[in-house]
Length: 408
Image (cartoon, rainbow, N blue to C red; front, side, top):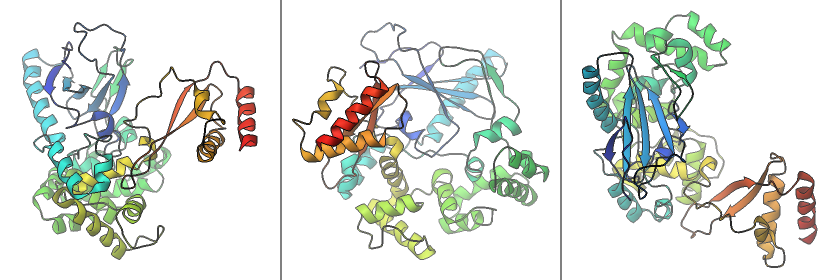
């Protein structure tokens, strides 16, 4: 598959198996990237080339980074406030340097996937569907505050306004506010007005503490990359609202501690169901249990355990249930999957359950359950796909559900 030249964008040959934007930018690591669908009907010069389906944008301190992707190429450009063209050329080179650092492209993700697959049959079962999920190297300050986009709009002036184009309408782009912008005591009240709830106090007090103790709070946080895991974790736990799990997320996602496995209830259940952790499926997350889960999974995946954990975490998310699955063929009538004369009793019960669980969906949509047969060593995946139901009214679908129930 050849790549297509996109006006205004530079290209970086990069397999989607090394970084998959549609997965890594939506799996819970970062919350500030925005996706904009593109007009895929626009003809491209090379019929053999594949056009990117969307554009991703992120606002940095001095530019808006725009990314597009095909299976073999990453396209990038930066948008700047008004500045000389020669200066922008130099900044474009800096954008590539930032991309390589942010996505940690010096690490061969495909080799890591092979290594994890050899160690772990569970991982091997999901590696193909969830290829290209790597750990981002994010700004520690943003990670401490959990990268809330609403903060940008209300506490940082717009860097620039981008006129409408094929990706979006006119839009203002705001960088993430520095600690100094959130340190004043009045910020807590404003944050509560904006709906931040209990987090309002933690955000303001953390910003104030960092500004009080450090001349350059953001550089101090970055300096923790040079500390040991224990030293960096101890420093993070002194911040307001930062507990063991949040500290471990910052260590992994911002401070280069690739072996760290942050543990929450979701990760705990993965360890119990798939990795032989001898514990009840539901339990209070005590410090001892937290350490047991982290050590168990680190023992499975090794030095880059945190990276592997991110793949498995994503594979078990409901929002990714249909990720990487082929779209249902439009040539196959939806009713063919609901034919009671050919379905086994188990299949009929599953079909009925799918209709029942989706009975509150919009009348313009009909839910169809997609079942994926996987070996006992893979994560069970149940995906819901929707298609237009223009030929079927709401009343007709209700009658169909009743007939299906009666037949079972």
